[in-house]
Amino acid sequence: MKRLSPGTGIYQLEWREGLSLLLWLSALISYFSPWIWRSPPSAALLWNAYDMFDLLRHLPEIETGALSVHLQALRLPLLSLAMLPSLLLMYTGRPLRLAAAGVGVILAAMTLPPYPYILTAWRTPGWCVPFWWAVTVIICIGLLPWITLHHRRHRDWAITAVVLLAALPSAQTLLKLLPALSRLHAAPVRPGQGFWGCLASLSLIGVLTWWHGNTPATSSEQEAAVDDAASETNQEDTSPAELQALLERYRDELLRKPNVVAVGIGLPAGQRGTPSQRPGIVVSVTHKLAADTLTPEEQIPDELEGVPVWVQEIGTPRAR
Image (cartoon, rainbow, N blue to C red):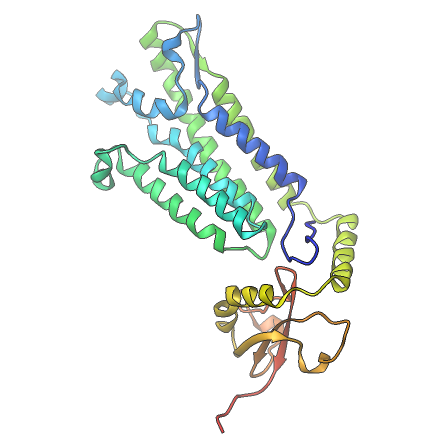
């Protein structure tokens, strides 16, 4: 269970996410380490996955069509590594999320075709697939700092999917290339340390997040959540500027929900003047609806980034 940092409404980083970030760094280093190994060793075969995409395009079996393999899959781990920082840091502060997005955009841009091929890559066979992959990932990364999934398990499942979509195709592609490389160099060629390090680190990230996303909260975690909620009520109120910024971030989303006519900052009518109550976001509706008649997207959350949200029924506003 995540704990809120006092008085800020910002989620702190969990040990699982910290460990996943270390694994991400290991996978990134391994991606640019040798992915193939020859016996006896040869400096000419110290190719990483990034270089192999360009170098192996000229492999005789690929040029003649004798070997059917999608070299673009060798870029998938880098695209996965580009998205993971933004997903892992989704529940941290906005500056850190923007920094993660910046790193991700740089990594994703590295998979774009070089100049001048990029000018026509969007329609050129052999280049169009990695081009559109990179563009799609860059767009997703640009949106992630402004998106927060209400259920963290959805984030964990997304991380697992991103890892699987990168690890499995790239591993399959390299294994299909090994016989052709062995024939080309007349020597045994095997997966190198970069391959094993990158795939192992990505797999551990996927296993860790999948396990956490499918494990029910323990009693100690539930108690920690209760303690956090209790301690929040005794902490210093969120500043007016922070409340106003929070309202601006969620105003349009709240106004799109059924029967909502206004949103503001304060306390509901029944709790005004209560000194122990923290101010929060007040959502005014014409009339309240039963929760079972609304979809999860239509329901108004109980809190936003640690700040309480109250629903207040005011009827239909009329001009005087």
